[in-house]
Length: 520
Image (cartoon, rainbow, N blue to C red; front, side, top):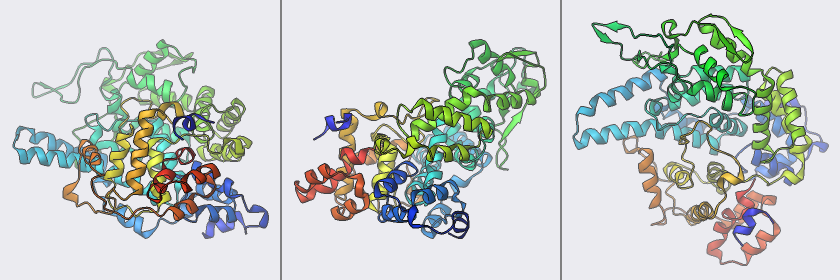
């Protein structure tokens, strides 16, 4: 009995894969496993479909998602979200205009500022949630979640409120199956990361701001050396906390990265991107990770990223995190070693490392089926997919994630959200999950009510609205038989017996609130 049970009683792919042979057929349990781990759980018919075509075919499709067509209904939703498509520069331009109007303290002005800032967050969140629910490219969405947490930035910090959409779209999403060095470089140079971990203000000790018309430059503040990004770059993004570096290496890497910045005043033309400022750079010789780094401007930082991306400690750190995310909270060291070797052999090819992971005996072992405890994000998204509900309004879902302790883009610390049972399983959080399950199953969440662009909310208001979601029945209650049919072997016989012996009105709630469903 595990911990939770103690707490509650297309053409290209056809050519690539060839025709499906009888031997390719997989068990429903295997199909359910890959649907849960490579995605956010099954929708109606998914288990049967993947079982018949085989899990190997499904895995290959998910690793090569370009041939999986985005449904028109989803594409139409995404194309209406214009604010989330703004470039970093244009988003900052709008944000600065809002801040410039702060001298107007009228209630209308305050309301307009809240709505504009809320709109940036809302549309970015809507795109993420709608894709997670409806996109056939499930592994792509899972990897966006994984890498965003790995390279976390906090939506609530200053300029990052305006930059979060661009960061996910431009620095994370294009690289989730690519080369780790490219992903590392994209995050290192994006204004959202430079601002979040303060590298945009890091300068050499002797830097003095230029003056213009007798006044110091607004952006060129003489803050001196800042080690925040250098520390997290090694501790979280690459080598890991036990990666063999010292405090001296942190300081030297920070010196190497001086001058890596951006100009927040460049706005309106879509080019508020990374710049290297040689006047802010420390041109001294650095001794870093046992290497002498001679003065070479921006190339010093590129050299450091090259070294970090292919360091054996990085290979181990990334491999451990992938194995923990996809297999179990304490992944077998043999699997981590195998993935580390593959990482180094392929020079950080993420797709090939994942392919090795998904073909490993550890991933395929039935003992590892259903042993991962869902994060609040995974729990909410998988519940909507299993329920097969059309979502026109994601605000109740965002509010529920916040109530469950995982507001989207809301991790304040650089290490992002954890994905382990220890991080999320406790009596209070469990009670909140059951409340969400009940509200969803009994039709109390207004997911079918469209939201006008002028009625968008900020994150705080979303949470407040979620507190009142259970006052009225606004949707049909969930069909118990359909829900059980969708989840198939994911719901055990013991749980089915318990559900069948309960009042009809509680059965769907018990399914979504069961230990079986909360694990994957």
